[in-house]
Length: 297
Image 1 (cartoon, rainbow, N blue to C red):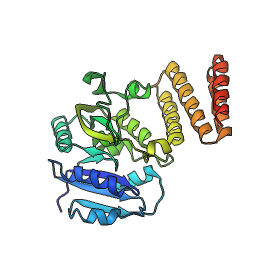
Image 2: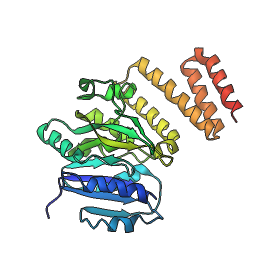
Image 3: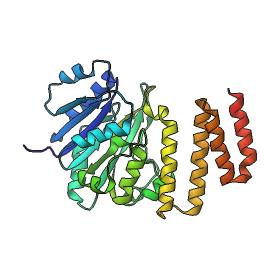
Image 4: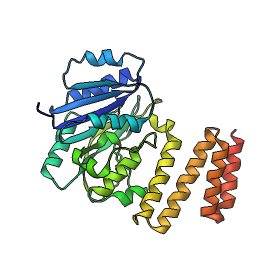
């Protein structure tokens, strides 16, 4: 049986209406040689019935018991993937009609590249919030090796919905690390470490902001993941001593604030203590910030 050239992987959970719009943008792509793998994390709404109404044989629907463990779900989707290329798409984001065709063309014409990613715009229910997520950066800064720029926070790590990569990349990167609930940041930095990529400056992806976004819910897990990556690439020599201290201070402090806001006060205090050990001269600033947080209880 002939395999499709691209596997598109969408994870979803109780997003029937948003998913309907997302799937419609995939099925209307000008490039049609794909398989759409939808991993449903135990939705209790009418997701499956809604998908059946598309009546499109390219949809490959998988219902699994709810876990909320995004890395495990993405790995499930990767195990189902076929063909040469893999694209992720979040269940609330949208693609322009020529998105897949543009990315396939770039990878076909540049065999040395392991992946490609697009610019994107950000919107909510009322308006466009950001016309370009890479505004102000030159194309030369976004092509080739961008790992150091991403780790330093100078370059935004590509959102999953903007990315397409060769399936053969998994031979070096492996799958997502399931010790992390999301695992996206750590996986994508592995991809950047092993492969060079291409940037397409056309904003063919529309990233939706709404109250149900997972990013806010996973804030603590994401900071844990970022700290893991900083230590990992410091050990490999890809992060300098100065950048190592700067990033650890930044992420431990943000993790402390996130823990405090979620009433995990003991863990928050441990994170602030780590900040003090990294840079003792900040003791006064840390105490003032902690006092502000305590007043907000």
